[in-house]
Image (cartoon, rainbow, N blue to C red; front, side):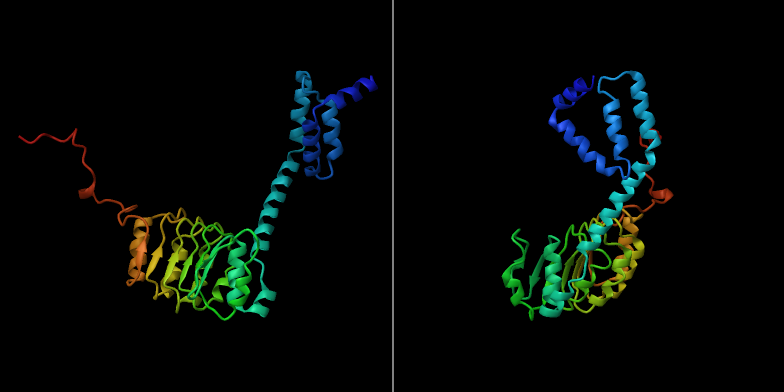
Amino acid sequence: MGKQRVRSEKARPANQRESLRLVAPVWNGGTSGIRGLSRAVDPEGSQRKGRALLQFLADRFYDVEAVRGYLLQKQVLKVLQKNRSFTYIKERYGPYVAGASFILKQGGAVKFQDKEWMRPNGRGLSGELWKLREVPVEAVDASGCAINYQGLDHLLALRELQSLSLRCCPHVDDWCLGRLHQLADSLRELSLAGCPRISERGLACLHHLQNLCRLDISDLPAVSNPGLTQILVEEMLPDCEVLGADWAQGLKLGPEEQPRDTASSPIPA
């Protein structure tokens, strides 16, 4: 009987054996139980063995929650790693090169004064970057980058920054907008379009940026009333072109402005 079991294990496809080995380490402290279950529950087993499998999963449900917590923690640590401080680069090459390195490593693009846009090329940082320590960064495109509150330090050190795109940055929130006043003297263009964590409260912090000429606040899911919010932002920044929702979007119509049902309306004589 033992030899027959050994032969059946050897006959099992390699991909099935590998998948069990990949899953086992996830169950912290319980790998032996999974191995035992894989031997006890045959793919063509009876209904009783199927119930045993369901009971096993129910008994170990707390492990599933632990795995979810582990994956979430791993994701948070990954974001923190991406937003780590570039202290060595800043001390050796200055804030311009350090800020540009931070953005390029995240997949964004930077433009130094009187230079062409610099983008990641897949082969590491360009050697030209290290020669620009005295050249200010005037534009940053960080669209879709994993910048958070801590990582914003690299951008706030760019005192001559005129254009900043934070479009679709998943970790940029209201707290981040509260720090942009440090760029009030230089910033002319700002895009916050598609940032899921920005609300009306964060947009209110932009009143410090009186030198803004163009602001994009379109597609902000956390903003409950886009139309009214845009009107308030336009009043707050009168010299700035505000892009966003249509001015009437989200506004409630008065009784005299409600659409009439022409089918039920009386036909005039």
